[in-house]
Image (cartoon, rainbow, N blue to C red; front, side, top):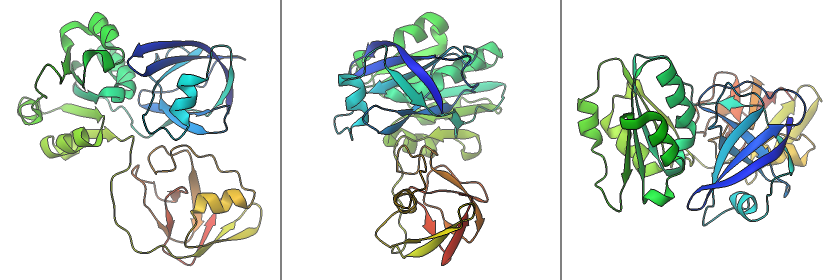
Length: 302
């Protein structure tokens, strides 16, 4: 964890605050475009937010938070109670949405999905790649950083407010792609579904803020052995692995609790996990908030 202080909070669109977090002791951990951090809020909630500032700036991180109408307490606290001067613990940056070198990029962002795209766009322009951003929102006033984007990138940016303009035609965009162009897309589920239908799978990179709907068999109980402590914990069918570990004294970090942020990643030493996340756990890893076990027992590095 790193300790920061909230340096500035600025409204950058309807119901969106930009937060600038400053280091309290030396440089912050380095990060790459696509990375996110967990904020440990004073109401004890952990929430994940994409870094949307400049990776070269190791004194400050910038994130943006939309006030969700059905907030589970995170965005509501940020908007109503969090004020500059407050010290906040944050996680080290993690990256599930890696920026891959390419001769050209099409960036597609919807609403708050612009946040991980911003540093990617900067990096692509600095690398002198061929770059286009299509940024979609319900209204012009709901789209954070739109003015910043127009000022910095001019006609490389196409901003579409759907209350005034037609939604972009992804099939037409796909037809105009050069062979080496990669597509990066972040936004609501409907946008991601349209992107997956239109763009070549091998060149499309997406990040989700909400999990996709998936079907699994009935939850069953299993055992998990924590190799460092020597403790074996029973995980009943009606409890997540994350909750069982936390209730037994193993404080596993967590953010989304939906299998999209990666903060609860565990190393699996033995047994077969049943992966239910949207990230794509690497071999020997699993995400404790949603994933379970296919085998009667798992051994994890805790």
